Image (cartoon, rainbow, N blue to C red):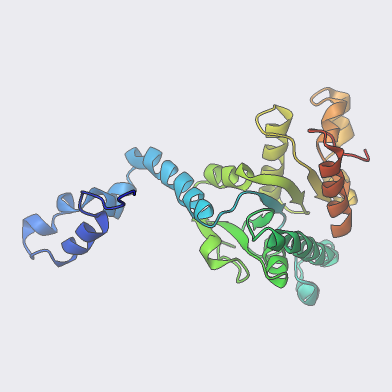
Length: 279
């Protein structure tokens, strides 16, 4: 029988013990602080490699502890309003885009209904944890009675996590790179709704990883063909030779949650890695 007792004193015990140090220059000196409990020390420039590792490990351990094996990623704009708030949108275009809030919510709800059947270990919705499309994704998962993940990041604006994320699966980041890695580590599909620079960054990083063979090909679903064709001249990239015509098969345009589900289901049924049926 395995003995889980550890021979060494637990770090939590020492951290508690030093809360009652004597009021002397030696004991109160910053140099005397335990290194792992010294925020000023951990925030030094020289400790950046350690902080990078910690940001990689904390969510990884948390997701493992909850048995999360696969995820469905939702990217999209923080400024896309809820339908009930559409009249307060800053532009007519954003007002019209409130439909994508509902599509994201419907898509996440349908995906999570399937996730619940797996015990919430497979196909768990993950978003950036903020407002707009991200909120819609977490909200749809809550509608279905399942879990969802939020990967928030500290920003001057829009950094507060929405209220629909499963609290135990709500993580905060300092490093964009580590956050983007966590989006894709367990991804089985990537749904991308209209958005701004952040959405573009996340989308093109995923496409680049798939294009270069650094990531297994999964369905990449771009909601709103009109939006995406106006924002990115995909055919011009092919004509210029900066991408190949075959690279246009790395993603699929969809309009509705049902369209996206059909692509995912068709992909699974095709049994062919790297092929999106119907293109």
